[in-house]
Length: 349
Image (cartoon, rainbow, N blue to C red):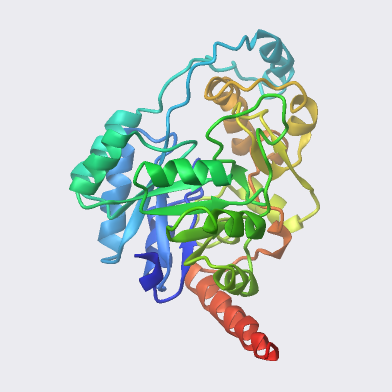
């Protein structure tokens, strides 16, 4: 699977717009492996994206699904009151803070019907019965983990490979359990430390993720035992990405720090610090997807206005090193950088 790639780079699934069929196909055609993100899409939209990707490439690609989260019943009324100031500023009505399962079962049916080669999971492992169904359909099962314990659990359920996500990664942390008392929702391991800890615990192919934006990063995680490196932030500014203009400009300016926040969705995610995060991160309840629905109209209005101060500017810690280019150029540059890094290992005798 991933160890057979021409170049062992995986384009991370980035929900909310950045990942497009064009980006996935471009990465796959350049020798890497692309993932569509099913998170927050309707089943029909997912089916359309799968079909479009297949029109653009004959190569393999994957689909990432969000595992439904339990309804914790957390009271979000106090948070809603704080959010009202942003609703007034952008002249919108707040969304309904409802719980839902992101149409998980229907989207699982889509990937089964479409026989997607690789299906990955975020926020938890699939059920044993879902693993069986996917494997019977010929799909490989990949689970994103943030701790050695989660890696063991995924392995025990029959995962074919794991994405090992360090705390440096942009976007949502793939925590199996979100501890509301911790800013990051749980233990925070750097990608290299987590890679070695997981490798000592399970015998599965590991894909390293977290702050990887340079070919030397790819070489480093391969040397540490990964079969591939998963990169997201480096593709946010790719020509084929659906990243909003406000998000692109904030990334290019590279003036902001990154931090974890629950303010946008109710689950910890790393992004560029903006006015919304400053005002609402502290005390934001662990209530996903309720907060995601509640704040959705504010995010959309902010993006429409080209204003970066109330949109989720997801990005990894090394985002200032990303750049504008086509996906093919990005992959080629990563190859050159990785080869140069590998050559430096000749110093080891």
